[in-house]
Amino acid sequence: MLEDIISEWVGCINEYYTMNRDGNYIPNIDNKLKDDMFEFIKSNKTLVHKQANVSIIQSHTQACYTSRKLTEILVQENYYIAIFTIK
Image (cartoon, rainbow, N blue to C red; front, side, top):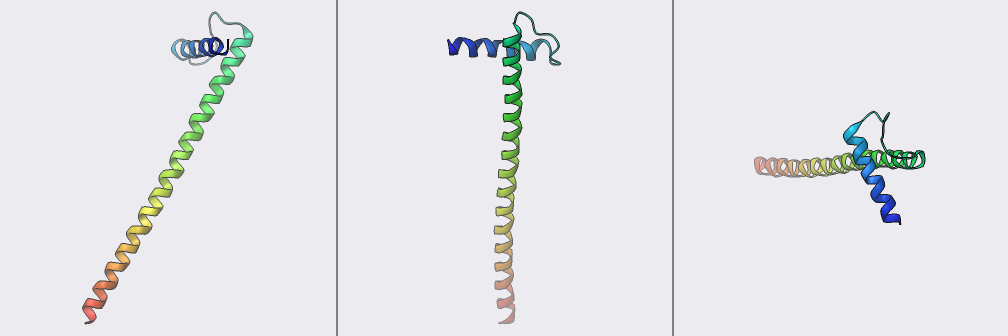
């Protein structure tokens, strides 16, 4: 039963994206299914947006880590160059 409902939603959503991206016309579905489908589409868009934000945050964190490590290496190399030059 649930699998049939979800399959119908997926079919309608695919048809929605294929036939009419503005959402004004969706053939062969009743209002309840239409409302459920739009809720599903809205949730999907929200999830995609959240995943994009998480990806950006993870990339930023990795960039900060890499930058900090590179700075540590450069500072260490400059330290060794300074000691070698003094001797």
